[in-house]
Length: 301
Image 1 (cartoon, rainbow, N blue to C red):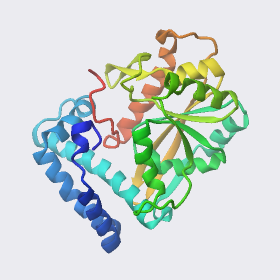
Image 2 (cartoon, rainbow, N blue to C red):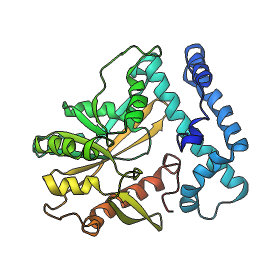
Image 3 (cartoon, rainbow, N blue to C red):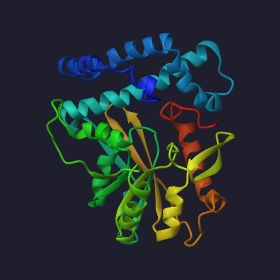
Image 4 (cartoon, rainbow, N blue to C red):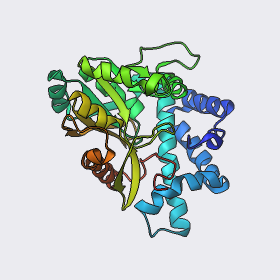
């Protein structure tokens, strides 16, 4: 669970090798069996794992306590672990092991054909990394705002176990730790009618511009960059969600297309209605898929 630096130590090279071994010897079912055991140990004996789940579960299931809460924590960790195992399966056995469908394809292509640029607003739900394969429908390169250390981790999906490149990554990375947070690069992509992907549900540590909205009954801060970029360039925001809906099936959904008026300036309050619209989509997602929301930190602090 990549919650913070301490929790990254929960994974180890030998542990990853064990999963790859189970995948080769027994396939997905064997890897899932190992996963269930590992997750049970984590939830029972690593308090930081339970603590990482609680901020969200406290809001999604405010009345759950005791064994019920422990079971919810376990389901959430297993759901996240299945995503990681599925990514390892794709890396080891090939992309044909997972089927990804796209709901809203025609709407997505209609926005692309307007040639105004496009902001894909993603979230830490389901497995957006695997679901990105559905973005091949756009037939355009996707520029993704992503930290350098995270981008090298995500590129693992496009490498074989030994590090050999098995297919070209569908996205180009813009590092927010670059000059002015990558703002010029992002503006250039959109001004030239390109596609930019950003995460909408987690404020990076360096991000100063935030917009406050209500999410699951309490106020949270969300990054403002997507709405500001949309206002500055006229590019529409396409809200994308993904979910695991069967053992070998992920679904990517075009949840909404948000048009932000141009010339709104830089005041966070000007973007509140559009960020709140996104937060409402995320709330609906959490109602339907309560254990596939993978923000393992306290958004409500």
